[in-house]
Amino acid sequence: MKIAILSQGPRLYSTRRLREAAEERGHKVRVLDPLKFSLDVEKKNPHVYYKEKKVENFDAVIPRVGASVTFFGTAVVRQYEQMGVFCLNTSSAITTSRDKLRAFQILSRHNIGIPKTAFVRQRSSVMPAIERVGGAPVIIKLLEGTQGIGVILADTNKVAEAIVETLQSTKQNVLIQNFVEESRGRDVRAFVVGGRVVAAMRRSAQGAEFRSNVHRGGQAAAVQLEPEYERTAVMAAQILGLRVAGVDMLESNDGPQVMEVNSSPGLEGIEAATGVNIAAEVIKHVEEQVLFPDLDIRQRLTLDRGYGVAEIPIGPESALVGKTIKESGLRDQDVLVLSIIRDSQTIPNPKTTREILSGDRLLCYGKLLAMKTLFPSQDWAKRNTRKVKAKTK
Image (tube, rainbow, N blue to C red; front, side):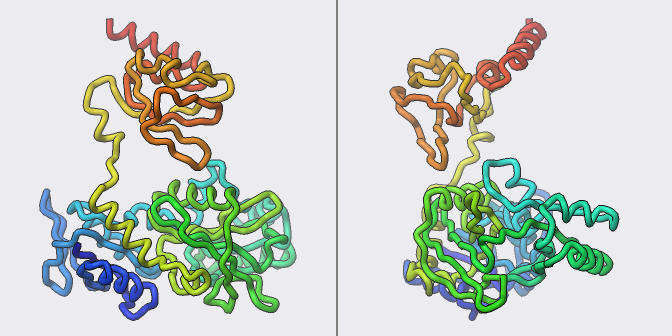
């Protein structure tokens, strides 16, 4: 394969390790500075130039786009996406994860622990927001900070209010978060590659420092994650659309709380702490994806009018609970179960003898009218189904 690594630092540890791992597996690699690209956008004819020479014959692109060049870096990734080149992390996923507020908003819809978070603009809203997240001490965090920069611990409500107002006066956007006291100076980073955790470490701050980042002097040690932490890390990466991610979690009394999901996680600290060849795991995943690319079944399987793909939640009241797929009668209704999502496990192409349990989510392809009746709000679905049938008569 021909692989492009988008990075401003060819000598940086992570970039160098990815290049070495790819070359060891027989691939040709170029490290390209994303700021030295030119992009031509034309009807059905996008082009990419690097130092004014076309660079388009890649099989895969590995983005290592720094936070300071997110806008242009993701534009380069997006251009390769339009040209049909596999990109390890998509431009959309990188942009979403870099916006801390947006990432928290998306994660908040799911069964994933996150710190209580507030975002305000008006001065009069600052103190009520501080009190809503639990009061001092609170964490004040810049939306675009990295490696612990722009993260402040305020010990009193008044100090927190003054810090927020000062930052806002300089046109900075900030988040106000609950401080998880029991995880003070300590967090866990899980390195997710292709839907599984390949390595994890616990980072501990030194001295009076509350930030555990290795770049701020924190110490790291390998850790075996409990199933709940592993599930949370994988889900967080998948929800934000990242194939490769560093998921940072606080160890709270209520279980894991996601602090950040990093789209370009560093390799140095975690490879040293765990001894895992993470760079090789990343390259193996690139190989798998180029050979067997992900298909968007929601687009590929909706060609027939009246058919589509739906993810159907199975609640305790569902008539399907306790039945096998065969007993459910779904096939008779022209509905095919493609996979069952059960907790953090995905059961692809399940056998007809597989039992359906409460809490499952069924990824199905079939008649839209039939699938609508399977959703929890069945009365609403049936009413709308009758309306659609009446209109088509």
